[in-house]
Image 1 (tube, rainbow, N blue to C red):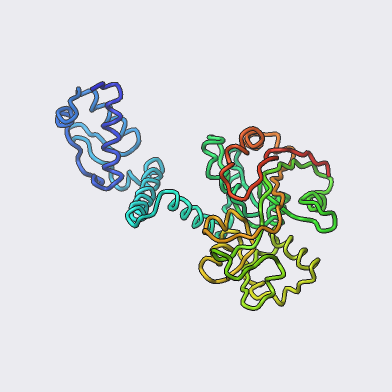
Image 2: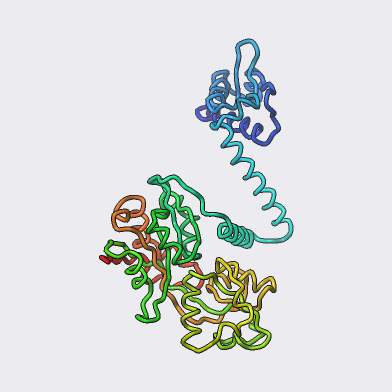
Amino acid sequence: MDETFLYKQIAETIRQEILKGRLQPGDRLPSIRTLMQEWHCTPGTVQRAYQELAGKGLVISRAGRGTHVASELDLCTPQVRLPLRRAGIVHRAEAFLLEALTAGYELPEIQQAFDLSLDRWRALQEPEALPIESHNLRFAGSHDMAVIWLSSHMPQILPDASLHLSFNGSLGGLMALADGRADLAGCHLWDSETGQYNVPFLRRIFPGQTLLQVHLARRNIGLITLPGNPLKAQGLPDLLRPGMIFANRQTGSGTRVWLDATLQNLNLPTEQIKGYEIEKNTHSEVARAVAEGEANVGLGLESAAAAYELAFIPLVQEQYDLVALAAAASETPLSSLFAWLAKEGAAAMAGLSGYDLTCTGQQNLLHL
């Protein structure tokens, strides 16, 4: 066996034994002679493996006393604690994965279930206070499956950057951008007076400033119902029918802005919609409410309905934009992200259900 990298294989095998708890703090490791015989290698290869582990703080070698797993006190240093912590959650995830596979679920189903659960908890928790660093992109705004896709694929898109999400509605995202609490906002606010998306609101919130508006997608919004649409819902007037229980989006979300304006134009009184006060912070939560019987109709994304295998009745195709201050948009990593969207975004996200990516990445510099 080639010993050029054999020492790394030996070191990794021992490291896994420590991370899995099979080797406990203070345990003595096999002697160099023992590992030489086991791995059919030279003393120098074993010594190099132990040096590798010692450099990571996992083992301690003392003359005349051999090599031992580091003590609990030594293992509490950040250099060691963080890898151990990460390994611990990976092992828990693998245990859940094995349980789900044994129960007959397939990998795509498991991945989708995990994404939906993470999506829900992201909406429930308070926004994370992140340090303002060049590699931390702070997103705030409307819940969107394409934005979630971007965040989860950032290691492939921009290996040196990360996209941290806070879903607080379109208006909340723009306010966070204005207050310096976000680097990037996501919105789809429809202005009933002009019939335009987003720009009228940007003029009101950012007067005299220069922004970069980047088109992410046009996406299908409609009614989400049980499979087969047993209540035969076709449009917003059906929400007033007896037996309908509605799951709504929260105030300040772009979907809610469109809904309230459209209901007003149709002269449909909200007080006659049972469940109008049932507010959900994400499209996934709307779909989940329908799937679990809390409601039998909701308003949300086609992609959220597809994730729960629910019926979808399209009502409108809306424009979802990413917005950044022009000065920040010219710096990396924002400029790199926008360049990737223009060049590769549409092809990469083609599998998302209910999205029109024809104009993805198109930019508009706004002098407000």
